[in-house]
Image 1 (tube, rainbow, N blue to C red):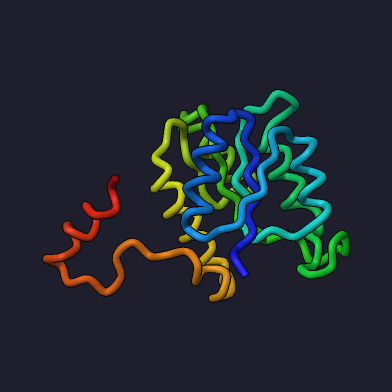
Image 2 (tube, rainbow, N blue to C red; image 1 turned 180 degrees about the vertical axis):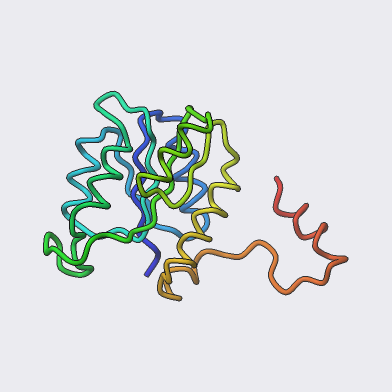
Length: 165
């Protein structure tokens, strides 16, 4: 089963790009445009990782981050059943890339922070790294191909070049 991600992003163009990139890498993405909808999704089921935009029409992804960190997460496989306080990895996306904004997101409990504009490939690499560190089941990551595994040094640049379309 693919890792389950929630993307909270109000910009449709960015959301399409992120969903396409992550799904191409074998991850399952649920997209919410509004904070209200994302809150309902988080309460209804467990996710392996959250990607949250900061600036939204109806609030801030930082509010959802605080909610996730301060309330028990649903137990996987039993929607709506409280589990332990959430250690779900969270990556923040924001057009606000000043040091103060990044530090605030990290201090509120985000595991990573990526400023817009960003590279979709970098986002995918960061997501997969967070999933690995969180101990996502091997089956969840098996569908997400590694870019260049077990490559000799001389072949690394050729491998990397083949992945940049």
